[in-house]
Image (cartoon, rainbow over all chains, first blue to last red; front, side):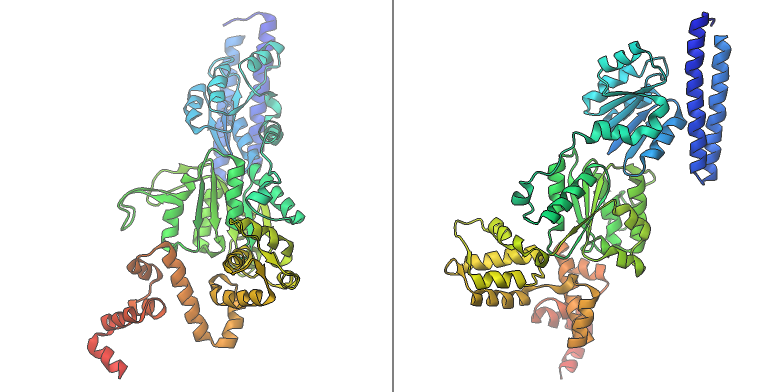
Length: 61
Length: 456
């Protein structure tokens, strides 16, 4: 799906903010837990979040 | 307090849950569809991400949750005026930038949940828990505020200081959606306490004919009052700690966890910090319980309360008058039974022929009262002193008798009580019952011939 320039920038900024927030939250959760399984689970969600972000941007560009 | 977070950014909502801490029951949903399923939970607060499966889909969740009475917070990375306006038009209480949600969650709670919370009015201290003591009033008000802010409350105080009355009035004044559920940990046999608290499934143990809902679940959205928590065994304390922390637990025999958003008030007539030092109480549980602490001072430290308490208990038109000497004695008397003793004194005064209470009357009351006082809940130092005076055997017998009598109050079935306390019929009737019962018990245990022999 192609978008015009200002719409593209607005959506990209919005998605980037969301991604950064997710990553920051993931980082804090990892720092706060001693549970190895929980760390792995958070890692898994981070990877999935990044993959979803990349896929979404492919559609936008 | 129950909080629902509906956000497809799972790590953000997990962090918010972590920051909220254990005082809240936090339920997470990662889509609008999942979120709608949590309507029946009737949360106090719902946090909705604006963009869910679709852009701005969160708007559609505001109204349904508003109808359940929940306060609604909408969070988003959008900061356009038009979007914010739509959220307020849909009825949201506060719109927040999602970027600061996790760090500001307690501020949000303060802003929209706590500012409208009830506070205790002065009339409580004349109508429900009578005191003119300013320090005690302030302590009670502070504890109530703590309870409303979702912290657990630990009430300590000697027997008769009104711990359960305070817990009940907190429930009445808090106007919570759920019930006040009380349990006296000392009156329930150790083996049954787990089932009483957590409930059990059908057939989970011998005698579990039907499934039973535990007190923790019955207190959902209300108050669970655990009286005499000091008598709880260490393994039971461990199970309770987990339930208090997570607000979910397994009923006995169940494979699925049950959730309950209860506020906890615990009471103890012993110093729990001393019990921790003695290894009889878990420090981690004590730390959970004492979010807010309230110590109800004994009447002897606030004897100015005696007259208003007497007035409270006097439901007749008869006016009681204490002469000057009695007033002086009242202020110096130790009132070991605290409010209960003042109540007994009021009843005693009302039964006197005249309304004037003299020095002799008060002395008679003191002597009568000594005989009636049940010492079962006294602390160890009391029993040591008694043993040194009367001999260990006599005091142990007295203690056993008191324990049996206390257990009988909550279970009148003799056979069950004997089984629960793991005592024989003979041991039971040695302490409780009339002469005929005792004889029958001995005949049953020894056989009639041996009994006759023993008599000779």
